[in-house]
Amino acid sequence: MKKSMIAGLVAAGLAITISGCASYTGQTNAPDDPNRTQRGALIGAAIGVAAGLLTGDDAVERRQHALVGAGIGALAGGSVGAYQDRQEAELRRQMAGTGVDVVRKGDNITLNMPGNVTFDFDSATVKPQFQPVLDNVASTLTQYNQTVIEVAGHTDSVGSDSYNQALSQRRANAVAGYLGSHGVMQQRVMTVGAGESRPIASNDTESGRAQNRRVEITLVPVEQGS
Image (cartoon, rainbow, N blue to C red; front, side, top):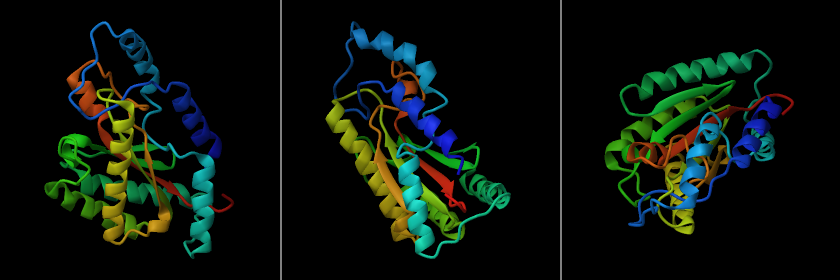
């Protein structure tokens, strides 16, 4: 499962964790906020490690063992890459034109779902118009069932930490729940609310904040010997 690579990404991400939160609550950052410069300086480091797993290597390994115990077969050797190649191609076909980005890092695949596409403002209810997209995601994940699924909610840096942390978790839970109600085995799914700790763009602009408000679904293959 290339544990060292995943652990390195997680460790790097934690090292650049930035305080603040996301999805608007009516609060704004003051122009003279001393943290604004720090956030801007750190954002370059954040890009490149923001997408992907947040739950960590141990959590994924435990979930893999549980899936093997539940009868999900593990992938062996060179079959891992080929399996993910097929799944990636299907997801790219299904997500074309939907606003959802498909990102491949090694053998892991991440779907980046912008918040403005997935949810209304300050809501954790999946938009009705986005449900057909999640239907297609669920269908593909059911077909390619030899993966662990992490659903992570992310926010921008506007609003209180506690509120936005909770909102990011609710949004992750909503997406995971929708997938589960459409045939995805719940034992495969982990959820995490990242709040504003994993920005992929600067929170000093509206376009950057919009990119940071997102849900990511990361797919990790179940490998033999994991």
